[in-house]
Amino acid sequence: MTLTIAVDGPAASGKGTIGRALAARFGLGYLDTGLLYRAVGRRMLDGEDPVAAARALRAADLEAEGLRGPEAAEAASKVAAIPEVRAALVDFQRAFATREGGAVLDGRDIGTVICPDAPVKLFVTAAAETRAARRFRELAAGGHATSFDEVLADIRARDARDAGRTDAPMCAAGDAVRIDTTELDVAAAVTRAVAEVEARHPGCGAG
Ligand code: CDP
Image (tube, rainbow, N blue to C red; front, side):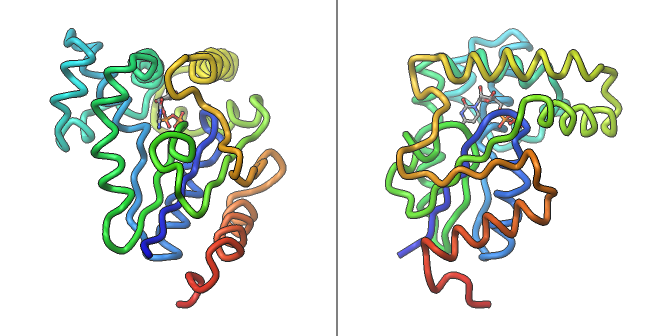
């Protein structure tokens, strides 16, 4: 059976770091599903209809400049509330999830909607202030002119929109393991996630 790991959680909770580390540790493919919504958001900012953009999304769109920035994040969470946009992205995500060799997907609805049968589901959280501090450092390192207060306000607004939408709202699956990274550094968070995977999927730890 192929191993699929679903990693969900709010903005800048550390799910991408954990997802990438798990993929490397267990030799799985990795998909940052937020990038799909960011790419659609980017195309909307460029004047396209978001539903048409989602239906026509190409691999090259995922390499567009500025996708990691706050403007694309805000646009992503707006297009992510449109059911037709989400529907257009489902098949690609499910195909990735069931690829030979296994996969880790990180997002908001992986354990609840995209891969409800995933044998391992993690829901990664952290205090909003901690998440804002991490994201502020990342953005500052990437040359974005912003302030901590602005980043915190953006994250809170985006979390509220993501958790409050009707279609596939951000929430932990009933069978997800919660990992709060507020007090954990990267190494400790990854160690915890690896232990959870090994406990739920014995045998995948070899190697
Ligand atoms: O990196 P960060 O956690 O800040 O955001 P992201 O994972 O890149 O996601 C950007 C936005 O895309 C989120 O705020 C959600 O609105 C949306 N998204 C979603 O709705 N469903 C997913 N599976 C992934 C992202």
